[in-house]
Amino acid sequence: MANVAFRNVRKAFGPVEVLHGVDVDIEDGEFVVLVGPSGCGKSTLLRMLAGLENITAGDITIGNRVVNQVPPKDRDIAMVFQNYALYPHMTVFDNMAFSMKLAKAPKAVMESEVARAAKILGLEQLLQRYPRQLSGGQRQRVAMGRAIVRNPQVFLFDEPLSNLDAKLRVQMRAEIKELHQRLKVTTVYVTHDQIEAMTMADKIVVMNSGNVEQAGRPLELYDTPANLFVAGFIGSPA
Ligand code: ADP
Ligand code: MG
Image (cartoon, rainbow, N blue to C red; front, top):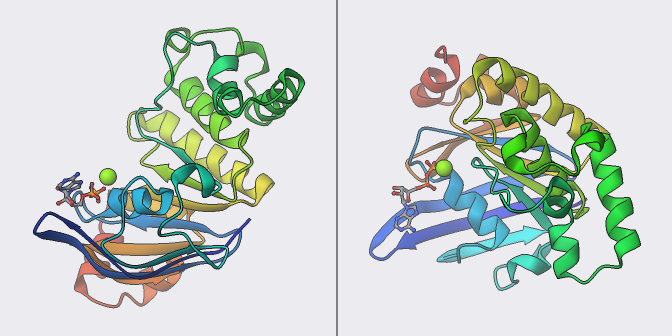
C-alpha cells in the first residue's frame, strides 16, 4: 500500500491548460473518489498518476517517492477502465495472466495468482471462457481480476461502471467496496456520478474546470459545502 499526493499539478495540451495546480492528498489504504462534470480533468489526473500522460508542472508522489519521471510499469499501479479493455481472443485466464506472462512469470505463479484473484471475484468457473461469453458484470470482474493479480500499491478506476445497467451498477459498487475492504489497497476512483461518490468514498475530491473545489468526507461535503458549486453538485439528485 502507499499514500499518494498531487502537489500543484498542472497539465496543458498544447496552449490549453486543463489542470490548474491541483493538490490532493490520499492516505495509505484510503478509497478516494474524484468526482466532477464531464471534461473537468478527472481522467487526465488519473492518467498522470498512472504515468500515461506527462506532467506539465508540479509533482506526483506515490509512497513518498516523486514519480514524475517513472515509467508506468514501475509505478506499482493497476488501472481498471470503463470499457474493460479485455482481449477478445484470449480466455479469462489468459486475460488475467497477461501482465505476468509479459513479465515472464513462471506458470505455477501465474496459476496460483489467477486462482487467488478468481476466488476473490467468484470467477473460478469462468476461467476458460472468452469475453464474448460473459455478461457485463462478469467482464467487469475480469477487468478487476487483471488488476488484482498484479498486487499493486494503488488501484485506479476510471468510470468502471458507466457501461452497466442501473441494477448491476449498484451491485458492482458494493463489490468494489468489498474488494477494497478485503485488500485495503489505496484506491483512486473516478466518476461523474455523485451518488456513486457519496456511497463509495472515504474521501471525495470535487473537481470543476481543472481545479479542486473541495476535498473531504462525504458527509462533510454534504453538510458544509465550500461553495455553491459543491453544494449544487453533491446536493443535486443523480
Ligand atoms: P474528464 O475525465 O473529467 O471528463 P478529461 O480529463 O478527459 O475530463 O479532460 C479534461 C480536459 O482536457 C477536457 O477539456 C478535454 O477535452 C481535454 N483533453 C483531454 N485529453 C486531451 C488530449 N489528449 N488532447 C487535448 N485535450 C485533451
Ligand atoms: Mg473521463
